Image (cartoon, rainbow, N blue to C red):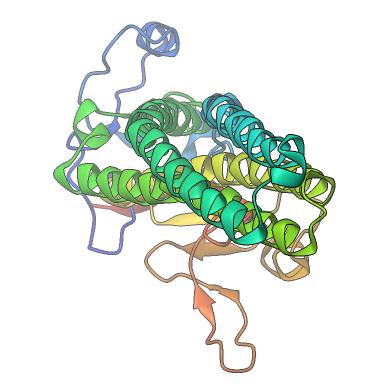
Length: 329
Ligand SMILES: [Zn+2]
């Protein structure tokens, strides 16, 4: 008589991905220390400890280390600071030149064309700058998240099942998972490349307005400050949110590949505007990755959205994986 994990496809072969280990205290200790690679053994019921005869185990909730998001954010903030500093310096120079030129100064048309040339240069410079960092910043984040997902998922399962289960190296990287990661990287690269537009479009509009009103820098300074704060907040949110999403996608993919389909939805606080539907309806309920629940109701012409914790913008909900068994003979 054996225990096998319950999966949607009629069971996995033990020893392939999710490894059911022969229970052994010494080995358990060693594997908890993270050094020993567990042996592939099917466990017979009689060697289960009484407490271990549960038909299901709940893992630890799966959360990404926030330091990864902070690291990504730090690199983006540094680039944004450089962009903002250059923009302010150049615009100040443009408008001051106009003022100091006195009665021989440029007319509106002249300063307008100077401004257009300046913005052409700035767009070019910043687009290049963010295109250059987009891939390395994203890659660094994705690599760290991938590692973090492996460690937290393996830890969650090992701890929940008192060391009876562990994840094999095979489950850690599959061809499909590489595609999931590549798609995440592409999405983040595109987001980072949007930074110059998030900043410069508004500044450019404000600069032409300042020329038209003739108030110059007096009008422009508040716009520069406001837009600087806005784009920095945007980059911070993107860093934290994308890190969570990449983590959720990688981890969910791994869970599915080892036959772990079920999870408990856990709403985690910390958001200033929690979705009440997640907080009061989804929170604590059990769902399947293979049959995703509605995570956002239909609204007007917007259809309902189905998915998993973390899929919606700024959703900080997480999964607690469930390892369940059925008896087979
Ligand atoms: Zn949520």
